[in-house]
Image (cartoon, rainbow, N blue to C red; front, side):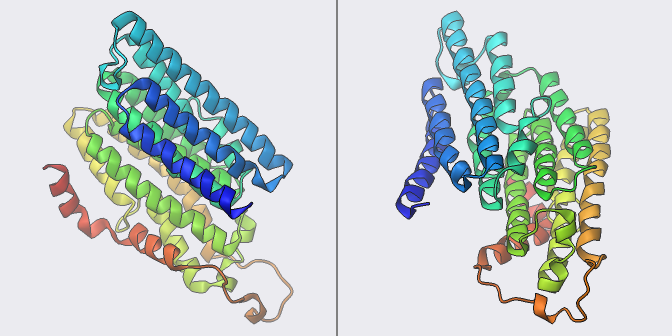
Length: 349
């Protein structure tokens, strides 16, 4: 793609998200979401591969449907209640419709079916943008409207997303689909705590972005798209393979890695709010996700790819990619748990 065109598209991507962040009026927020969607469509379709075109079409249709639902809900609220402000969303029909529309935009269960298929058709860099940056604008709106949404609905969507995210990834061999189901599960944890502690949702979102970026950049560096090709990683870069295994365990939420922090604090907060059953179910669904992360770790570090070579030296090629961002993000994805006391102190301010 022409660098100038790419610059314009990426700038528009940033503009759309910032516009949604800064808006207090539903029409302005909707406009930001539309700019965001239209900017990423050419980036997704730049490969000119049938799978990429199919993924782009599915993405466009789902996002357009969600945007139309948001416009319908905000218009309904303005018609019935006379308010266009995001914070003044008060009619039950409007709040439920907006919640479902934002769930569709984010890929939360039960409207998650588009996300694994779309992510599977994209290259890893575009998949990284879709899994991280594209979640920010809808989440900003969701945090603003969360106080007006029915609490059992949010908890139900959160628990269903963690369950679907864990269950859906069990039988997958494609790494991009596994990361899509991982995304659904993590978003479920965020929605689960959204109404009780929005600051915990932001913390969880930040750590999710760090860990997912580390996962995508690791796969990009190793050029791995399936579990079988992941098994060749140790021959290319043994150090990166060892760190990638730890990073996957961090995504699974195992101590003493960074991914344990949000799960720990969320379970603690749910228990404080008198929801021990929800906390127990969420912890049990996390075990499902942990299973497929362990599967990836096993393929990455404990298996040798079948080959007829007598030496592994020719496999170790010099990297031409810039690995500094990967190094920084991987360190953050592994070592932030000791900062938990400082983070909890900041959250209580």
